[in-house]
Structures are given as C-alpha cells and as structure tokens.
Picture 1 (cartoon, each protein chain N blue to C red):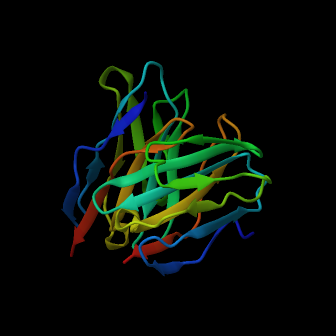
Picture 2: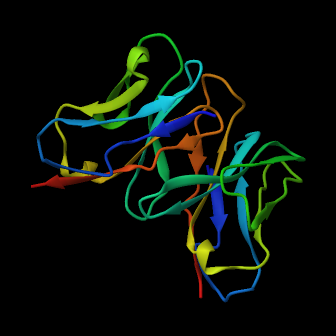
Length: 114
Length: 109
C-alpha cells in the first residue's frame, strides 16, 4: 500500500515564485491535512479537509491555498513564496471521526525559499 | 479551542533508563489523544491513542501512556529506553489533529 504520497521531496523556490505541493492518498480517507514543521515549533496545521469539496483553515493558513476536488488528492498551493515559508511540509489523512481515527503521514516536502 | 502542551523541548536519558514524556491538554471534554514518533528525516508514526475506557493504553515499541483526567495529562512512558528510541515525540489532540511542539529525545550510551 502506498498510503500517503507527497511530491516533490525537495524544492528550492525564489521569492515570489509559486508552486503546488502534491498529496495523494489511496486509503479512501475523508480527512486530509496539511502541516508545516519548523524547528522547535512542532507541527502547525495549515489547512484541512473533511471530504471532497470541503476545506477549512487551520492555525497558519496565510500565504497558502488548497483544493479538494477528489477524495484522493489534496494539493497545497503557494502563490507568492516568501522566506517565511521555508519549512518542511507534511500531508496526512485519516478516516472519519471515531475510534479508528489515526493520521497517516507522508514523508514530507522540504521547501526552501531564497 | 483545544490545545496541547509538551513542556519539555529536549530530554536526554541513558540507555536502559526509564522515560516519561509529558503532555497536557486544554479541552472542555475528554478529547481523543495521540502520541506520534518522528525519526530523523521521516514522517510521523502513531505510537498509541486514547479515546475512552482504560486510562492506561499500550502502544507499539514498548511504549505506554496514561490518561489522567484530573491533571489533563496524557504522559508517555517506557520502562527501558533503547538507543533506537532517539527521535522526536509529538502529542496530538482531537480529530483536527493539533500537535504539541514536540519533545526531542536523546539517548546516551
């Protein structure tokens, strides 16, 4: 099973450039999440989605956009990259709320904005 | 809004010693609680979770955690640490998966 797949694994962007971080899961999970991880700051929730067509802001949504046109895919878009967006980004997915709720994580995308 | 706090940024223990990592949450009702581990350069892996029932939960790799409602805590424990346990550990709360800042564990030989 592939689980949660993120691409690319590494990327260097120039200030002002745009890019899309891809995330796809093959577990038919309804919930999907995007996090950023900065040293000493843990994981901060950027956006999440409870199902296709439904997205909502997390703790740190500014500078990012998401869409959820299918159950499988949850891309994260950076429109105007800034140095403050240098981070490691993780995508995760989980089933609906309930005792089996466990988030499965991708391997991460390391983004550097210069 | 619910939140989770991990008071210890970095902990160092000797191999074979016992370990306790602290996690405190702030929430009106009993939340769903999780502990995840992140090895260097890797994604996160679930260690254990608590939803209801027995307040002492067993997880993978010999870890356990105890939910204490009166203290709003969900501390992670292991009786004897192995060098391979060196990693970063995250506590998370509820279904929108808000994470604590993490505790980095170093294991001394």
